Length: 442
Image 1: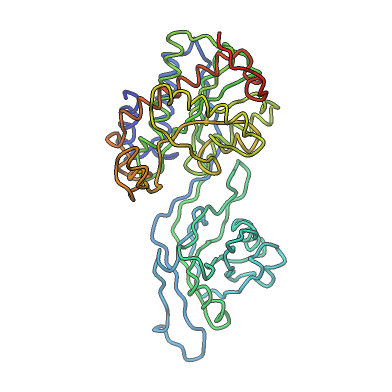
Image 2: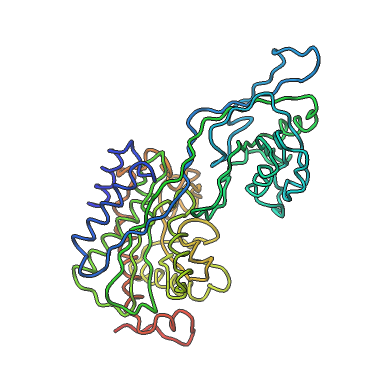
């Protein structure tokens, strides 16, 4: 818990956060300094810097419409309510003030540049994607509107959508040099959107946003063991950043602390390795897994992607066998020590995603986020049915008091069990990919 206490202290010194621009650098310095002091002879400590986009809504945005007819008065202006009627997309452009803007409906969900004809100087009104999901990403449609000269973009819900659309208005695996949107992008309810479409010739709209949009330098902290076969490398990763609105002790100070203590213990006892280990602390996970994406991108550029096994449960079809083998090692631990557990899918989530997308098997551990606990889960694990698995997930209360010492002990021992098993395998690649290989430990 000592590492968690230090990370909690860092958060308290940085407005209760360890996000990219507020507390992360101090967290990374702490991890680096601990490694240099306790593991420098066992692993090479390095910093991998990269650029990330950082966006923040500074003030409540404003959105209104007024009739543009002879004889109309200011009293006929309609002021829309933020978060009920509209909201700004995440990464939805810098600060902007638009007055008396004409609007224009864009057909076909705006997926092609040619759909945005005669949009220059106007705000594009675009219907949201349907449930079939066959249309293009919102980013593509908004980028097309921007290229065509639109002054802003408004996506409106379909009739079946209730919650306002809220997703990242940029390329998800963003890297340095990729564009950022420069016009405001809003989402509105179905009723407001259809009203705008029906009256596009008689309405003018005002939009005012106050956002911060910058590109910052952040980093991954890496500790690469000096021993072990570099043709069979195991990456033991955990993200070190938190969301802007919380200290991130469970998510993911807990995982980062376990990772750090594991590296220090293996260094202290000079644990012998058959395979090389890269202990990794990712930056910018909370804004799109950008640290792990950068790491994997560098592996691919260097032609080394097949040398990696990430520590993470289920996977795409081509990776099922090796990923399930990693999963089974965790199950061995939980079975031997009689800890209850559940399996969870790997279709979305955290830093295992970039590895899976590049054909690298993964496995790992988690303790739950904002999903609701079922009655069956309550019977097995305790707590309250219908409540979030972690009520403080991404909240200001995710401080050290939110951390279960029992869970930390169980998960850290499981992680150490699996990592050491993998690291001592005679032929890790053979065991992962060939069903005929038994697991042999020296």
